[in-house]
Image 1 (cartoon, rainbow, N blue to C red):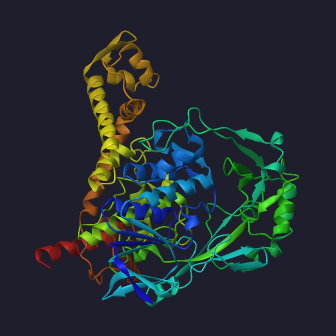
Image 2: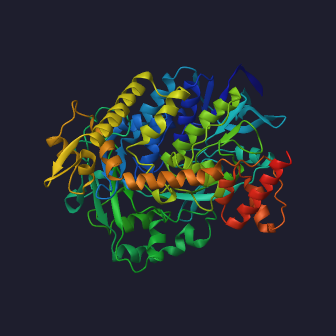
Image 3: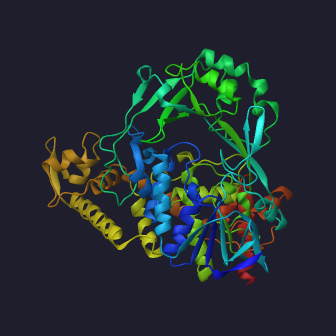
Length: 610
């Protein structure tokens, strides 16, 4: 064992989607940063589906980009199909999704990490968190090398004591083909952290040469492809289709007849899996009345024959997997290149965290991604970015960077995690956000880019482009307010004309054009802001009303043994340690009456100067 001579400001353990964002943010903010990962060939590996974005997830990617993160830029560079979802619905729930060339995505992110000034990328397995006087002091790897830093970010994915299950077989692994992480869970336990166990899964990969595409329904992307990053002018990659097929009665018979060999139903798997993304055996059992389930075949890249069989995640034995796949139309002669599997792994309850994602037990130690009980590349990347920013702020002695629920889906996600905890792998949904109309994909830059620029993560060039867009929006809104037009013989402002359901912005400017044509993104903002003005104002007023409670801070170590609070309520409040009255009110089981008691106690303390 020896101390590495170089001193770092921030160490990030794990180079998945969370780790890459955390390390890049730290280095770009001027910190000497170490990114330590078990395998340099697996940086930003897409362990499961070959896609970025989707409902709520696409919102997070846009927010990461607006704050100066990397995920949106890399998927724009390496995407092979882009689509906007929910375009027939309102702007609050429209979202972008892109299929990725998995190998290209990984290489592109690794190139970005390797080229980043101020960052060292090293291969090694972190096994022990170094702590001195209750403060993070660094990390020790499996070779006994100790790296020093006052801030450590753990982004361990599914690697903490990972255990893969395929039928009756199970073996230690962080994901298929890679070793699990040993030692860190034990180190966390020694520091007093509780450890839980979760489970997730993945479907088989099918050889394209054995798929009868003539029997499948193709699903093309959008033309032109919509980019994620606000800095991307256009997508030039060749686009590939996905394909849709379905399970059937024969498929379900095979699954039901093999449940005795399923680790899910034999009791072998102890970890809790996600309800929103069940395995195919779970779907067949729970939804017995459904005659079929959709299977979405996604290409994994330009230069591979592998297709990801989205919709049939499974941990059934390999022979059963092959049999059930071959009952599906178009897959009668399919060959499996990789079987599906379930994986169990350790996590730390996210109620152990402050809203900055720093742990309450060890100052300077941050957690991001699946170690917090979340699932999804996008959720991990969003947490990684915030953890990286706050690691820098901690080292510099600055206030934590915390996004509100009214500012970003990332803010909603982190508040839900640290306030409510998890009892299954957490996934972001638009329904989790109270202010969906304020938190749209299209306005992520308007909401967050000023803050990304102030942090030093958004370049001057990107920020100048954003300022021009915002200026165009403001100028055009003012023009529409003041200029008059005529509709059906009635004189009215152009704004009133645009509010009419039958009038689109393109129709309006065809007759009453501005002096200078707007950028399409600015034009979209104008149309949404005018047409949804009333709803947006109502949500903004609700934000202001509730913000009063979030601004009433609760001192650390506040004594909740107040008259009128039940023992259960006291225990919940003490466990979470809410930083504000607003957060206290969002803890499950905390009633308005309990909040009122806390408010009275805080006011009494203020008057007494305590």
